[in-house]
Image (tube, rainbow, N blue to C red; front, side):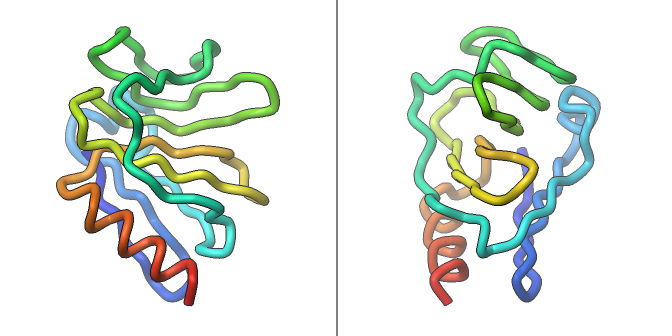
Length: 116
């Protein structure tokens, strides 16, 4: 699970607990202006096929960086319906898929902040 912090125009995703080890990452930072879409993650959504570095067990966990055709994505999800999908442009990452405590609240918070 992650915690999302919005400070000014910067969004910081803090990776918590054992997921730091599984994803090999402590945080991801991007600008609010890079957000193109925020939505609940579809349950059947899967990461691109190249994992570099990270952890992936189909249907159980995806944690780390995944690459595909012109895509670089950061995932930290257990595929349990608490995921948020954040589409980005003009950033190192093209998509983030993250488990959060309250997906609806996070979607609203990021959408409002990006629109402001």
